[in-house]
Length: 291
Image (cartoon, rainbow, N blue to C red):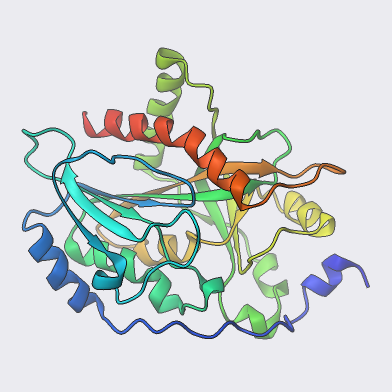
């Protein structure tokens, strides 16, 4: 049996023990309103290795352990929310969520989406989601940044019992919108004006359970499905924000690109690519928020 055939069958691995999150959106919202009586004009969720907006004005911070009753367990996810202003004269702050929860850590779908559902309930109009992802598209390079125009959901917990065949037969879910179009336009201007070496891309992201790298057969399968990048997050958040008053755009920082006979790096490579992309994303968000 080939790896790809096996991959389509129900997974045999044990589900990680559930981490208990004991708060609700209402509980989180009450704390957020105390932290900032003024609703932020945007929220940013940072993936592995991304570090931006460390020096906001009039900032207040709170640990995820206090806000959500749990902390991320992955290196590169500090588990802190910071609310502050880009400029002292700004009328409204921004909110930077440094890290996220993952299904592979043992969290439930409800836990993983709690931060984004809280952002929506808070009334934040714009949401920027970021992640570290592997490049499936062979034209991509490490530290490229892909604006997610569509996604495939292959990490829903139900697939541990049913296998992925049904999910793979469905078309990708589009998530392109006016915000992602504007961001892509601004990003390309930024590359030309300020000489950034990061290339801005657009494409389809697939979310998988993980945590592992894909086999050769799996990569070939996703290429045939026109997937450009693969990761283990963001899809639950995009599904949760769809149809709400919060407009979202998601970015994948390409931390490695699959090639035959070229070994993939580990989590250290993910963090290094995140450093390279952080400055570009910070300038991109600054440029958008200055409009």
